[in-house]
Image 1 (tube, rainbow, N blue to C red):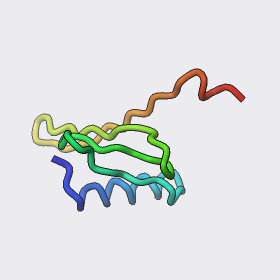
Image 2: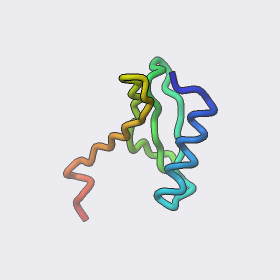
Image 3: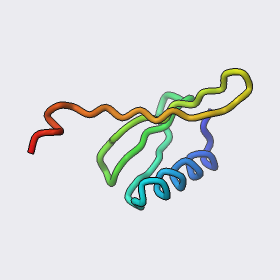
Image 4: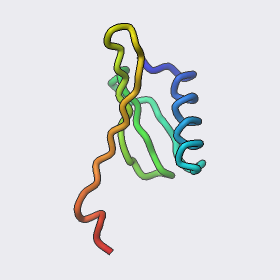
Length: 71
């Protein structure tokens, strides 16, 4: 489960890492094992929690559509 404190830590980490304070990490409505990542109001990806073998880690997945690459 991703709680509010962990969401805040993930958000702070992503903001520092990408040097962008417009990033936000939000809880998902019906899922507790992941969170949504936004840049401003645009959804950009999902963070999944991995609790295997007692080690907790997070996997960030971001899909990039070919139409997003067009100028």
